[in-house]
Length: 497
Ligand SMILES: *[C@@H]1O[C@H](CO)[C@@H](O)[C@H](O)[C@H]1NC(C)=O
Ligand SMILES: *[C@@H]1O[C@H](CO)[C@@H](O)[C@H](O)[C@H]1NC(C)=O
Ligand SMILES: *[C@@H]1O[C@H](CO)[C@@H](O)[C@H](O)[C@H]1NC(C)=O
Ligand SMILES: *[C@@H]1O[C@H](CO)[C@@H](O)[C@H](O)[C@H]1NC(C)=O
Image 1: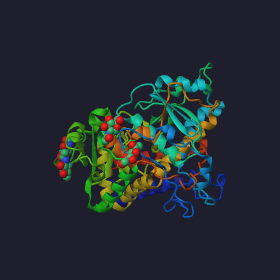
Image 2 (image 1 turned 90 degrees about the horizontal axis):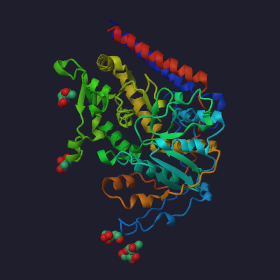
Image 3 (image 1 turned 120 degrees about the vertical axis):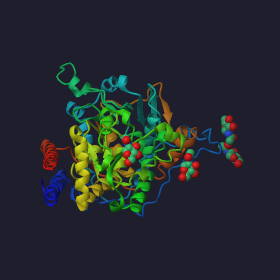
Image 4 (image 1 turned 135 degrees about the vertical axis):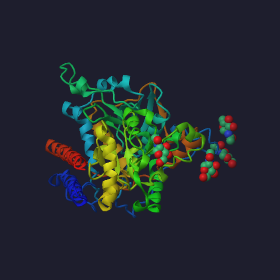
């Protein structure tokens, strides 16, 4: 039996280790002296943004005319992106470094970079897996649909791309992308490796929301929920994050229920059903508080009891994967309560930047009930360190993955991808032009409401953050070793109780 103090020292060390890794990820010599070093690393390092008050606000025009069901301004009426609008960007303000998770943009594109580029054949090879093909040409977006997506995943994703175009006129390069809105990663790098007839330049680059932790071929892209999830009444990320921050201030961490909360649909995945077998606080034993989300009932009562902002009432929040990644992770992280994350095989674009022992507390799926109970007991006995993890996690959501960064991530992905294309994208014959009016004016209800809430109203007034260089193999193995170290120390702590 380790004393409380002893355990505290151990996790304190973990936390410091994570810190050290964080600062080392950026190679200071490789970056110009003008930028702040990323948003990675130690507290107080987020450079924030310098909005120039001398640069005028340029509104993004949007109008459905006076009949909301017939868009009066069709796409043809909207002016093409004008290059000269680049002048609107604040001069002389050096952009900050993007957060470290942006460095995985290079990782995703690595096969094609080493192969010398992406051919049209390679892109078209991804078509059998794609739900739609999206072409940006001269600042306008065109979509060819191949099959129906679940709910409105495709619609909100395309809406997000239109907002990117509105925010950065003249900056989004011509691209030709195949997009899968499915849950399960379908392309395994192993299926392509070691095929002499299959040089990497012919491997299909497929855009999707998540990939396996072990090598999948996929270019990761933010999921639709950043622009809202109408079917389950989850607002777009920007206003929802504001709600959560407000709720966090209303109920401070010490006043929250001293247990680990999870609410969701357990039938989605084996690991979730397994989680439900943990002691649910019965007889004062288990430290988990588990609730089944019945989406049908929730839909009937207007989602009154599934408001995410008010789900920050517990001191600890459990994250568990769904069919693959789960869009819930950002809402869980934002709570100011440490996220107890059951290790997952999947990652999305931002989760690759989360550091175990710093942004979240890792839970071994093989021993999850005991690990959750331990994390809660330890956290209640070590409130300062516990809150620190909670605040690092929610700080990440506010400072490194707010919508400004999400759009910057998208812009960098497209810019890097476009630089690899070996051909000039052309608009497919069957493609339709998309514009905010054609997408929003004919919709109604919650979808319309969320589109209006997530609409970009102004052209960006500052340069996007600067993309840091790829991870060196040394950095990658150092990060992996540190993660491993955090996990094995945790196992030892649990076994010592
Ligand atoms: C909108 O309504 C005004 C009158 O209220 C009318 O003058 C105008 O022509 C209408 N515009 C369109 C596009 O229907
Ligand atoms: C808008 O236009 C459509 C199609 O022209 C028409 O069916 C509908 O009644 C109009 N709505 C209003 C409020 O005028
Ligand atoms: C867990 O316990 C809470 C009450 O503390 C109860 O409302 C909830 O339904 C229980 N969950 C399960 C999965 O039994
Ligand atoms: C949801 O809650 C609000 C106020 O809390 C109430 O006015 C409304 O009727 C509820 N809606 C449903 C469908 O129960």
